Amino acid sequence: MNETFRLGRIAGVDVGVNWTVLFIFGLILFGLSTVQFPLLFPGAGTVTYWVAGLVAALAFFASLLAHELAHAVVALRYGIRVDGIVLWLFGGVARLRDEAPNPTADLRIAGVGPLVSVVLGLLFSGAAALAALVGVGGITLGVLGWLGLINLVLAAFNLIPAAPLDGGRILRSVLWRTRGDRTEAAIIASKAGRVFGFVVIGIGLAQLIFGPGFGGLWLVLIGWFITSAAGAEEQQARLQSSLGGLRVEQLMTPDPVTVTGDMTVASLLSDYVLANRFSAFPVVDEAGGPTGLVTLTRIKQLDDEQRRATLVRDIACDPDEIALVGPRESVTAILPRLGACADGRAVVVEDGRVIGIVSPTDITRMLRIADL
Image 1 (tube, rainbow, N blue to C red):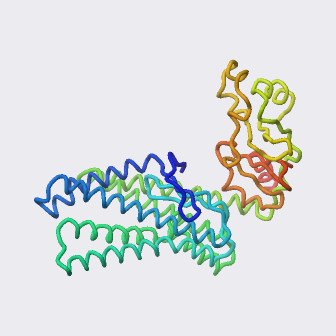
Image 2 (cartoon, rainbow, N blue to C red):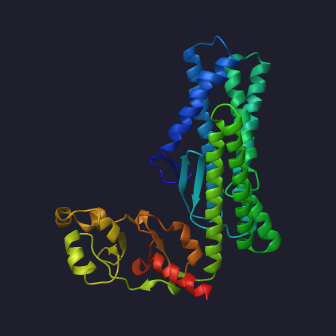
Image 3 (cartoon, rainbow, N blue to C red):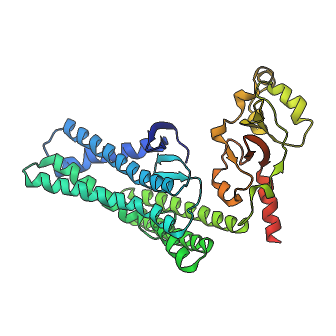
């Protein structure tokens, strides 16, 4: 899930927000301000309800951020690179570049998120109890109580042993330790996730057919997301199994044709694209270091006049948008880093110079060989 805008950087981790957060934020704000709080605390006033709803919604998303930030911080302590955190429609996701080095690390990275949610839930619940003890009641008590309950519910839901939930990651780590095979453990956790997703979809459909309102539609969407994500994780696990043990240097195209950023796109087409069979060209500086990557996909977005007036550096993917990898890295480790901007390619760098490129075709070819 890509970020629409960036909030900033916390504990060394980039934090972004996808536009879909606005939908769920508005839904929570509207529900609390117009239904739940007026029903529980009548007579408080419209402005009070909306202010309380806004505070509760903001605190809830801060809790989600703390949950995901905990995953990222623990991952960083194990030397795992983190691309950032993105909050979106179904909560948040910490984007980890690498896999956990062992089952213990996998368990701790997965388990710390729900642990933080439990701690927050207990803190908010304790604050609500303390407020009631000293005589603070009304809507303030309602906000604290709701935040305590929602964080505990969030922790309980995430602990369900089904990928891609944290509970599925915990199940994977346990199976990894007991069976000694990470791929098998990941596949079992993913299958559990698909089963759970179908169950949620079934409950949602039943509620749509037999129950009042459209609450079942939300369950169907959640179930669909869980099923799709679990299927993608199972496919990723099988892919990693097929490529296990391979290093980047074993499948990369060495000595790729490189270009400079100060030439026009028209010159790139006439001098390089038409003269070579490649569809992507690393952009380098005078020392041969990577400054970007330009692909045919990006060139196609320009018309003839624009190609004559546009420099390569203006349409190339920035270095932080492409996977810069080492020749001795494992292929499975770089797979999560292959971004859309570079059309799934990675640029191989050694001693600060571009020495190769890995394309989806290279990976597909190796998979076919593995199948033999």
